[in-house]
Image 1 (cartoon, rainbow, N blue to C red):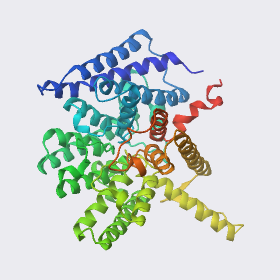
Image 2 (image 1 turned 180 degrees about the horizontal axis):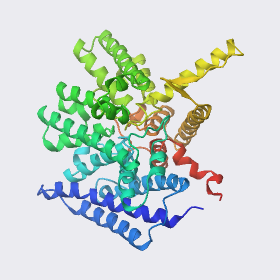
Image 3 (image 1 turned 90 degrees about the vertical axis):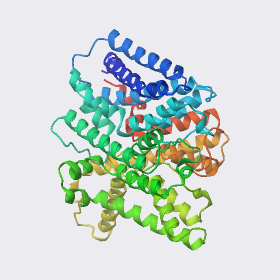
Image 4 (image 1 turned 180 degrees about the vertical axis):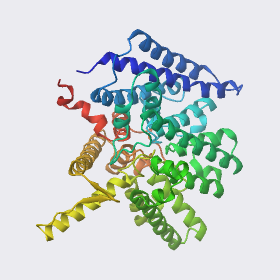
Length: 483
């Protein structure tokens, strides 16, 4: 039986924490005389106040959350975070409705990077800072942050961790889940400081360096400029962002093995990392050759544009330096394929993830060999490890579910009056947390013109994609609620 009181108590803790993070943009407003503190102050009071009421009014559960409660808690937390995270946007005059504010908030926290703003410069610095900070918080996961805190309060977080990282393989670095979460956060924070320092040295001021660092490490894609990264006209900044986007797309447990345990062979020998690197380099090379052959780009510009857009789309960051809708069809096809491919499991990126693509190839190869050698026994391996049939079936079910959600959502968005190309690619961009699509939601456009129903559908796609479908959709199955 699901204890809703336990979920309400834990949700209160999360909302208090979310409210406290709003202190950072409030300090930005305090340090900028022309910036109004009202939107952030009101949002902070409402969010933290609601969280405090829930926490104090509902008694602490006697035992840890069960698996079902953990799964439900994940969906509740992401939805509530998007609702309360929308308040700073709602309290400004630049968002016409709560729908628009919720869409922007969900896009930020799920690290999608899709926006309804034609010009982002109209926002105050404090609201801009909050907009980018949601990427950073959502990148590693609000739930994972809670996993590091809840055990300290006597509320274990193992089920939250499992629900958040439902990838091909969940790998605990430490014997205790709290230590695992803290280890990942330390790596995340170290990469944040490194990128911030490099962007400052490259010419950004502290505000824009911080905002773009949040977007990069969270693989989100919000920018302080409507032209995105193209507005800086700086190759050095682009190369720095390419490097950190690529790092953010790698499994953070591999970062731990490389930077903390100092095991480079465990990092570079990982089959998922190798496939991820191979696809990134290959896609960039083909796009670069295509751009150069068309004659509109020089050699260096072709390679930089190809590397940047490949890294941006493959890691589902969504920054833009070029309008890829103007590229040759083969380059556009590669960009579309990278939207589905995504980064590595256990990273801040979206997409199907490299390990799953690799596993799909292994399963297909195994079945082809079975067709030829009917009496043979063939195991599916990832590296040195044998993948169980239970894992293979779960993986295939996830692929089928993602395909079903994509088709159903595309039809639903098209039914609201959106043209087919825009409907399909907007669902792809939101499901896999990429941001820009094709058609009227391309890298030089935004989502403001879409119907209200389409915005809510796409917001749901963002959250379902961020939670990798099963965690978000299993709560709608009748068996979930049976005792």
